Length: 133
Ligand SMILES: Cc1cc2nc3c(=O)[nH]c(=O)nc-3n(C[C@H](O)[C@H](O)[C@H](O)COP(=O)(O)O)c2cc1C
Image 1: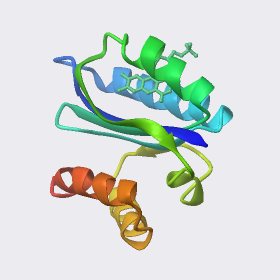
Image 2: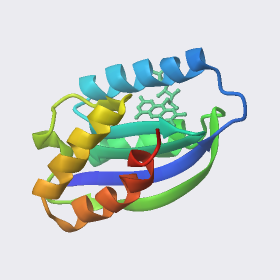
Image 3: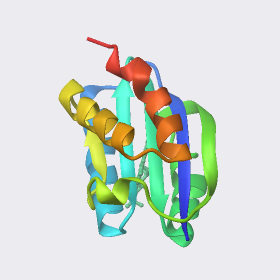
């Protein structure tokens, strides 16, 4: 069993590009080292993240670090439950920072081809990000 957490949040006003890069780099490095898979997107002041992995890693990361991070607020939790299998582990063993529309399209196509309850939900949730220029 692994654990999956999915949420959206709002960045603090005026979050600088460098601060965003700092979040991206830390997230990519820490998560990939700890076998945490998933995605992190940022668009128009909104974050969207899926985290999957060992419960003992995911829960403290989310509860103690991410939730208390002053660079975002208004966290809206969408999924927080155990799952048989990590959805994104077949997509990439590294954690995915989604920087471009092309990367998001590829993820969208992957989710379409891997229809389980979570993939359909996540696919719906990333649709607004796909529509952005
Ligand atoms: C929207 C958002 C998502 C984040 N996601 C992660 C994450 O998935 N993994 C991670 O290690 N840190 C993430 N962080 C950063 C953590 O809040 C925290 O700064 C970091 O884990 C501290 O790492 P350290 O203890 O190695 O210095 C995120 C921060 C924000 C604002």
